[in-house]
Amino acid sequence: MFLNDKIMKKTRVFPLIFFILLTLYISPATASDIFKTGYTCYYADGTQRWFANTEIKHKQGDVYILTESGAGNYSGFDVKVSWLAELEFESNESIVKPLRMKKYVFNEHGDALVNESQEFDFDKNIVTCVRENIPEKSFKTKKFKFDKDMVNRLLLGLYIQKLLEQGKSQHKVQMVTGEPGFYNIEIKIVDEEIVEINGKAVKAYKICLDPTLGIFDFVKIFLPKAYVWHSANPNFEWLMYKGLEGDINSPRVEVVTKERITS
Image 1 (cartoon, rainbow, N blue to C red):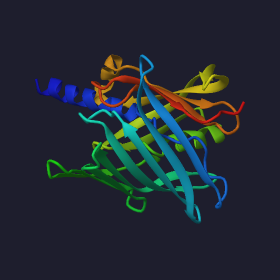
Image 2 (spheres, rainbow, N blue to C red):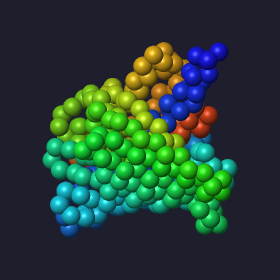
Image 3 (tube, rainbow, N blue to C red):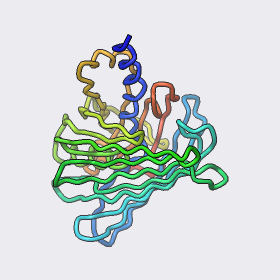
């Protein structure tokens, strides 16, 4: 019974690591650039679920600030919400890595619901996560030790883009999520195909995130697959996500970039 309970607990949270929507698809080019983009989430029947907009600004040196704002229906909340997240990250020719993140979630009346933060210490290889549930007046703090490249949800699109720029088709990474959780993931290209984005046919890489579950690896056969598509052109733009929005009970969704994609 104890083993079954542990399996069910892990089955509920593992699909969260597939959730890479709300990610960017172009790395900052110069210190003077401000890059802006957006994306829309749809139910399986094509009804809009939520939307989000993001921008990247240069801070100093190799450090940039990614700001994301969004609104709509989102898994884990019984009401419509809006959110604002800010990620500070480092980016150069060889790496993309997170430094610190803060996120604030509100109900449709503007009342605060959840505050999240992530702090990455690359000297000690530790990430510290804090989640505050404001209506319940509760805090959850967790620290995770990492020994591979680290990403979070906001940075994952840029990280995959960097892998493609470096000619890598498969790579292992560790990811921290908002519940908070910590997972090992294998990123791998599984196909190259033509997809339709905003009415335009685009040649793309289909990429799968494969979780490494240890002794619970057999549980993966019960989980729906989730995929992300990046353009196969030299910019490797993020195009689309299909899969669960959050945990195993969340809806299957499709998230598509709103930007015009170049051939």
